[in-house]
Each structure stands twice: as C-alpha cells, then as structure tokens.
Length: 220
Image (tube, rainbow, N blue to C red; front, side, top):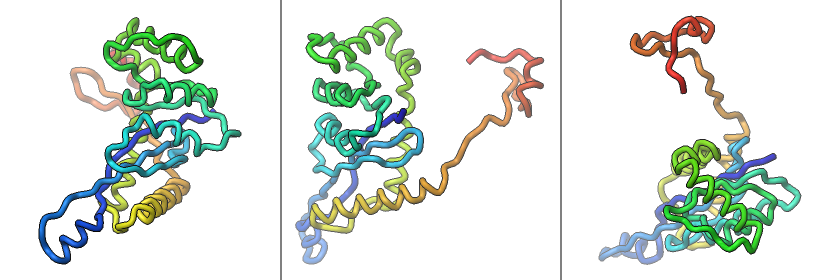
C-alpha cells in the first residue's frame, strides 16, 4: 500500500518584462509559478509534479497529479488540504481505489451520494461532526501531510527563484530540481527514535522507558 500526500507552493520567476526592467530600468512586476507535488509518504520521494501559473488552485491539479502515477501502482490513501474538498477531487481519488484524507470544509454539507467519491466524502463529514475537527485530524492521519510541507522546504533550498524566463524552460528547471531531490532522498532519510521520557514536574530525562515505568507519567 502506498500513500500519497499532495500540496503546492510558489516560487519566484523572472519574466521577460522583469528582465528588461533589470537591464534597462523602469518598473518591474514579479511573476510567480506554483509547484504542485505528490509525495510518497513512505519513501518521501516526489512521484508527481505539475507547474502552473499562480492563479491556478490546488483542486484542479489533483486529478492531474494522480494521472502521473502509473495505473498499475496501488494507492492506499491520498492526503490533501481542504482546498481539494471538491467533487472532482474525491471522484479522482475514488477512481484509483484510494481513501481520501481531506478535511471537510467548515459547515460542510453532505453531497448527493451519486458516486463513490461523494459517499466517501459524506462519511468524512459525518465523522468530523461526531469527533470534532481536531480529533478527526488525529484519527484520520491527516498529520502525515506535514511530510509534504517538509519536502516543499527542501525544494526551496535548491533555489528561491527560477533562472529560466520561458515557461517551458521553467518547467524543465523545476523537474530537474525534483530529480536532484529524489536522488538525495534515495541515498537515505533520517530516522528519529525517542531516547527517553521526561518525568512531569521534575524535568528529568529518563534514559529508558523501563526506568520511567516506575514513575507516573502524563498520558498522551
């Protein structure tokens, strides 16, 4: 089972007008490109990438990102933010046989159960109402989306702006950065393990859980 997490970020691009302004003076207007990514939550590799102009939202690109993943690849779940809480997004996820982990919008109403995506979304709405939004996020595993946000920061570490001025070359530049990032990820990722626990009220670090079992700990 493979889980996918989707998100987007913006990066600055230098258009033809801005290049002329830098060379010859005069006013200049910033141009932004939006990068939409699909991350494998297990390997943290970028499996899908789309580059659009800044006005394009996340929801229309969700089906496009899923289409980049081969049909033979099983997708266990797709995690995205509330902007992707649309009929087309849920239908695209259901078409791949995946489970959608998308927080329903505030005051969300149930949809007419005309498709598998709508039925799954209605179940999320009912669960969110019953558990509350905060508890639903913990119960559904929505916190895993933070891995995509970390990968976005890695993308920006490779450059805060694009050097190419032509849109097609800008797309190629971003794809090259993604390939470099995947290469680094393939070399290995850090594994975090708990080294001990803190006794409440004393601030002392217990080197092992066995020693801490003798002292009362706050429930988590």
